[in-house]
Length: 298
Image 1: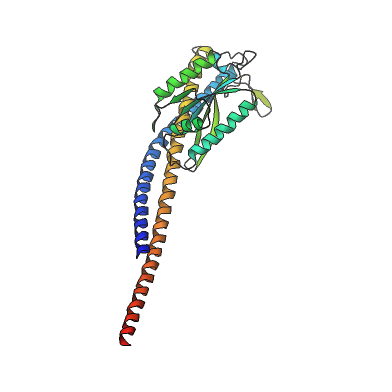
Image 2: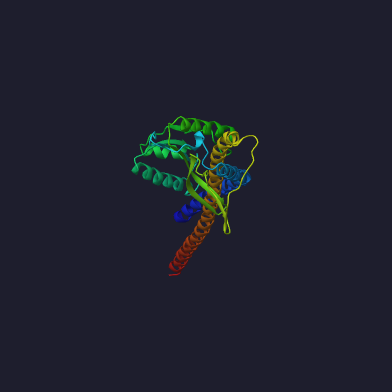
């Protein structure tokens, strides 16, 4: 009887855990739907702004001169700013592990080239990981939750643009989970500064003719660039935060669904084990009763 009681207690515990994981799955699904709308809605704008800046730079040929396009020359500092986006909570499958492995690979590559990395971490999981690695963290961001606000990202982006234009950093990168679709998320390290999408003096080839598009600007092209280049950086960083949040929610949703399904299987397995134990116990009790009856007859 003791074995059957232990199985019943374990089955009850598994059922309670299943209720928790099922609830967490439903919450993650609701958050995913909300964050998905934001990420999908902003991505076309982010891509279009980059495309517009690239076309504008091409139309100016080699005359593009802006602090945010500065390429490190003789005055380079060999110092890079790296923003790492992780989650505040766990139970999200391999989400944080994938981002941190990709980040470590990038850091090793850059340090092998003699560059110094300044870490800026968003999320408790990343902060805990780098603390364990004894790696110094330049700044920690705690203001970003499940719904990142553009105003918060704007302040962070301005800080990095000011540091970059002042020559403190040669480049600024962001490491995050890139949301491709509900079934595909890939860890990525994207370059924010200098703007990699802008390549001057690019001519377009159409058939046998080489064509370069000419634009008329009002106001002037430099004035437009002064407005568009900071917007491109801010939009790119904001999109990274949105992709990271959406990827986190879908990863947690999948992890909790897997945990719920495993709990269902475990409950069924324990129920079968309980039935066998109970059947064996009844058989033993019947054998003892029949033995007693036979003994009384004798």
